Length: 248
Image 1: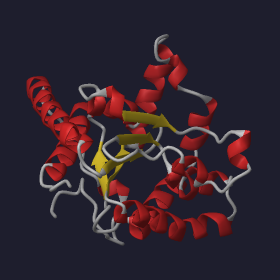
Image 2 (image 1 turned 90 degrees about the vertical axis):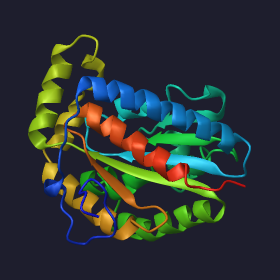
Image 3 (image 1 turned 90 degrees about the horizontal axis):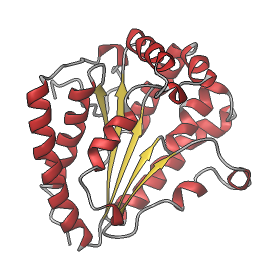
Image 4 (image 1 turned 135 degrees about the vertical axis):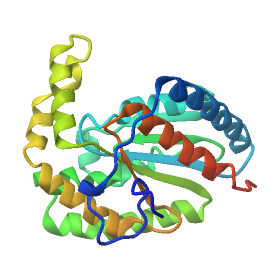
């Protein structure tokens, strides 16, 4: 594909090559409304099938994952969907294999789950920050591929999105959050610490794309400097793919 926002298996891919596109407010509102209705119609079909839908979001701090997820699910039936914000493991979770807490959150047939960060943390932040040993994060690539193959073999529909912003845009968003009393809770010392390792995080993400992007579950990398465009792009990719499926 010529569109650099969509990543297939490509060892030469670099996040610096991502294009960032804008959209007018009128187009944004109309497209969002239309796509949300189409997604709601699909959800009704999903509820009557033996399929499940799993949507994963990764990306740098302040890339707009939360806002994108909000627009993705805000018109859906909340009774058959769950959104999980993945944070530091609990003491109980530390006592088990790191995948255990994700198995417990997988949706039942007919339902959907959205993950704001996911099992890919093992090869991203845990790798970069040294929370996982070299042996653990290197082994995780194979574990993740096996895990996702089990999901796909069980008729799960899997989407993986990586929202990417430029380093300058992240800094601007950090500063706006610090200055806004309603958003101050969104910024922490950990965010600033992660920013200091920007290049290391990008390198880890690029290797993750290369090793875990497969035909049935490719990584979709979205240029997210412009939030409206990113939200519409994610919804469009989801809706256009699921509408082609024949659910049973």
